[in-house]
Length: 184
Image 1 (spheres, rainbow, N blue to C red):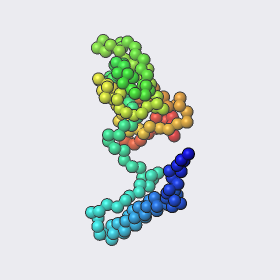
Image 2: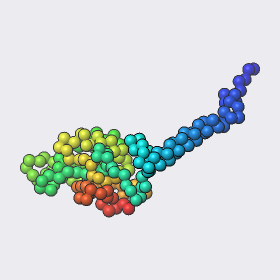
Image 3: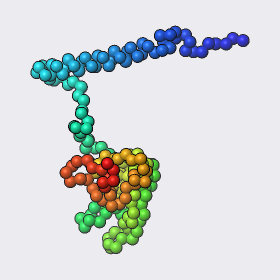
């Protein structure tokens, strides 16, 4: 019976331990480190300012700006009279790939509007922030430009955003905020 040895056995000790791959990774890291040290020194001396060097953002003290096209927490637009712009057409729950949107419709007292949402909930623990709900909305009621970064929580029941929280809208000062003060 002809039995072949395992495939990794012909690599030898150095190949089996991936020593060369580790050395290559350390060489790349070392090259980036010294390149940035030299470039920052040249920038301090007023030389080579056209060539950018690596920059580290000191996170807690300095916050990185959020891109304008970032998909952040959802919000519901309002009509001029203050009521929700949503007409409960059920397109956003039907297009949502994760099934995180739950809308319950009711009759609207206004004569020009057939329905309005009695409740509108988004389960942020299931949402994948794809933006399909925004694209599907025919009246531009739901948006993802609230200026609020999605929070993390250990309690999944606190991750459900209700209609009142969705109507709160973005903060007036342009800063990031937590959802309705529920999250630290």
